[in-house]
Length: 184
Image (cartoon, rainbow, N blue to C red; front, side, top):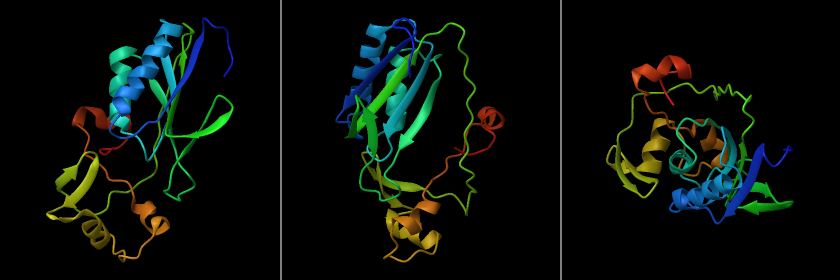
């Protein structure tokens, strides 16, 4: 990303975990806003496995503003499910959220993404969580419930599980047409 100092602000914070995602993102958002108070779009990259993405969005909304579009995505490690990597300040890092705040008054954003998932089966009911981790589904061990639903063995590895990996949530009716699906 290049541009004049008045058009963008770049920053990163390290040490992101699911438990501190909002706090770390708030630090990043405040640093970006200090560099440029006119941000009207945010490009972000977050570590997919070490992040509470809803907390990231909440923090940016609180500091930068709810009307500022956020686009970008999550990083991974080629489906190894060990860690995820981000490039920050010419170094490969882990547990890092990276963002570019753009402030060109002529910029507009159009964003739509779909991963092509089909919803399979009846809804699960999450019956126990610990922090952001699902411990039980329908009253039994989450992995067991998940494995049974998709006919996976207990020995299934990441490459067998990830194609079924996304859990969908029913969107409110007023958002379904805009999103292009009844589920997110």
